[in-house]
Every structure is written in C-alpha cells, then in structure tokens.
Length: 287
Image 1 (tube, rainbow, N blue to C red):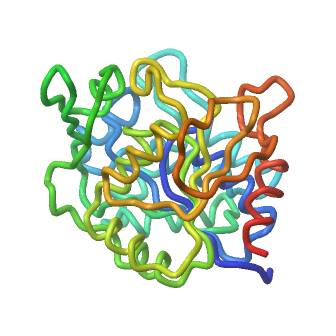
Image 2: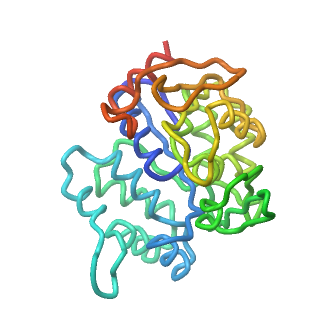
Image 3: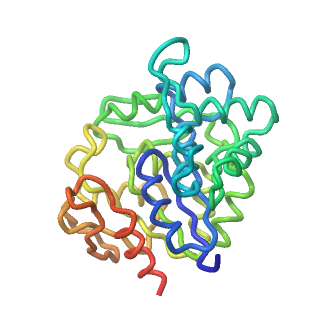
C-alpha cells in the first residue's frame, strides 16, 4: 500500500481509535504505546513476568488486525471465571511469546503477524516503567493512582532515563504525520511524551504533529479542562503540536494559541471518535 508514513502515540481506547482511522489512508503505520499501566490484567502480568504492560499494546494490535479476524476477537476475549479471571487472551499470548522468545519487541511482532496487523506496534519504553505525577495533593505514583488524581501539573517516569526501542525513534524521524491522542491526557498521551528520547524525537521531526482532542473531560484527571488546557499540558511537557483536531460539539476550545480545525469526528451519539470521520480529518491535514 502506498501512502504517508504515520506514527500514532498514546495508549488505551483512544490510540486504538486513532489507529482504526490511520489505517484507512496511511502506507506505513507505527504505534508507540505507553506500557505504564499497573492495574487489572496488565498489572498482574507485568508483576509476574517483569514485562511492560501488555493491555494497550493488545488493543493496538487488534485495531490494526485483518478485518473480521477470528484471532482479533479471541485476543480481546476476557476470562470471567477461574484462575484466569480478568485476563484477556491477547495479554496472555503476548506475555507467553515474550517469555518463550526472550524479547518483548519480537513477541509483539509475532503477535502482529498472527493477527495480520497492517502496521507495527512498539512499546514506548524497552523496560517496565512507573508513571509518577506531581499534583496539588503532592507526588503520586502508579498509573491507576494517577488516573484517580485531580489537579495534576506534570507527569514523569521511573526510571527517568528509560529508553524507547530504537525503531520508535527512527519511525518518528521518518514520519510524514504524527498523531497524538485522543485518550487520557496524563496517563496515556503524556505517559509516552514523558520518555525523554521520544520527546526529543518529536521536537526534531519534520512531520506534522496533530493532537486529536478528547470529546469530554475525564474525571478527575482532566476535570475542568477545555481543549486549550490540554494543549497547555502538552507544552508543559515539551511538546508543541502543529495543529489540533477538535469536534465542535465536544469540549470548548478555549484560548488555544495554536492552529486548530473544527471537524465532526465523533460518532452520532457523540461518545467516541468515529474512525471514518477522523480518518478524513487527518488525511485532509496531509494535503
């Protein structure tokens, strides 16, 4: 497939939505995903095996999988009883591949081949990390705790010098477009930007950096935030987007101070981003 080289960064369901959009127009796709999650199945597996959290990586692989893939459906299946209760099959497969192959990135590539993924999924760091936030109440550690904390000013990682895979830096340098968001501002998007080498690569890339604004506040993490407050948080972490995509029926813009485009990118209910509508908006910015 010919088309632009697109890198998408973040985590959770937001990055999955971006990837479903990006795959509709990109020729080469790289997802760079936060692995700081310490809750649920991901938290249990990272504690047991010393790996990066697999859950968001799984969601991205599924988003890039072949349409109607049985394996994609299986990867998202979650056990409801017994010793495996709460685990998604894909999380277990990724952990098993990493254990058998001895290399987390190779395990993700093999999982991608199994799913017929149209792009590559990489962790934001090559080692497990802990997300740390400075908030009004003081320092908070752990993604689950950070997500439940209001009035956050800055996030960082422990260890602070955690390195990304070299392939992630090369992808950012070679990209035509970098897509950030939507998704949890501090615990997904900025959890990736907080990796020093990724932040430096984003500052140096000639690619157009697009921030896809969330549709609503995420309580308590972004309580009271308009889109301008999201952009201000990006700036505070050393990231300056070139353009913001905002749904006019969602969060108010505020005083953005950066180029933005208003496009109806949500579904008809206004609850989530519609991949086809988001794809059209993102592709338009490449012209």
